Image (cartoon, rainbow, N blue to C red; front, side):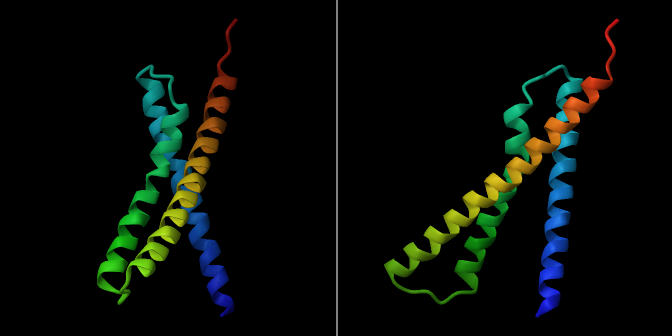
Length: 113
């Protein structure tokens, strides 16, 4: 039982690292092509992992559950949409903050004399 929280923490750390690195890499590519509109792209590039979570929940609903009835469908998909939206906000925020720190760091190094 106690090992579960350690594995969950490890999975969360891996999620944070992967989201941050992906966002920084895509932001770097956009900055190299002189496209400085990275704000929303950094949020949406890592926020799309929530789409995978939604597809997995659809797969789980179709193949693993035996839910019947309209109200049960509504409850399942209502909670799924809430969870997917919160995960989208979480992963998008991680990507945006990582990209913001990266951009501030690289532009702090540039010296204009």
